Image: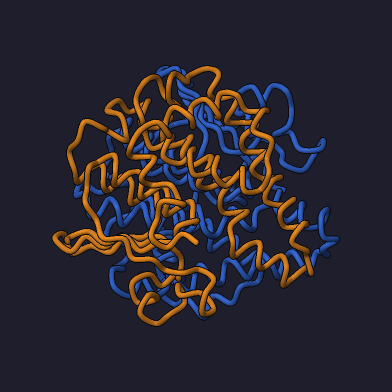
Length: 217
Length: 217
């Protein structure tokens, strides 16, 4: 198979790429990289050669001879490489910009501050307990969702932007999954919740769920 | 003037957008938002209406009736809106993806974990000292730069990608500025350093430097 996705079932960045691959109707081989077992398989020499940042996901497209990291970059790449009924980035420059901004509200302002390596570093550097790091993660999700819920009031339809699934939804759904892990009260976010529910009715989102992956435990 | 940039002189995300505006030859009005004075002007009601995330930068393009947050989204918007000799995102889909990935290596994996609000939260939540937070910030820059230095070995020319300035350079230069603030030893990063020096010889980068802004103190 031409496309390989290296990732981890519970990594929300990997989850985004799985959704995008499914929406674009692309068959791919999923290669699990366990972020915890064996001291973290992302630190193995073989994986570090693919991705020197030793993070997931990494996409390998053999036909195009490209090895690509960063989930948002991968999502846009897939959108430009494969035609399908789902255009993940709209045509008009203003809409493109708004979709990217909302995706980055999650991928730059929420996810990086509360991901596994940061929570582990808090434990190591500041003797933070499991409760402390859970509170930390929930704090940044709450701050980010507060702003996103307000933005959605002016633009949302069935999905984040009107009635088309875009890269914004691809980021939102995994972040909602992560929010629930950290017990964020989603009752504060009726629009976010409704959009995530609408997305999850689609096969592409259902198949991409963490619990439906071969490496889920 | 049609374009307004709300930002802060030392914010590296704002710095990126200043470089992009200069490279595209766009005149703009710079509106300082002081992130420290008065409890943080980004939390004022007026600013929060523009940007509910209460973060900088925000770009307002009155002719297009668009208010846009997220620096990378703004950079791509400017590239699509304005013609100039500088194409910040290349034409070919594989090159586009690689440029975006390197920009996101900085904008997703480095900057968000060591920015002002996170460092303040470390002090508040874990009683971290100024030295502690400086060590924390330097740690994530070091991790990120280690990987980027390796990536550049396979692709860099005068700039991150061959001989054209792209969105990757727009992210790299402000991150180098930030690394120096946190005393990261740049001798470990000869390629990053050389590229940053090459960029800083261009007027667009010189004019965008933090110390050259009206709100610099």
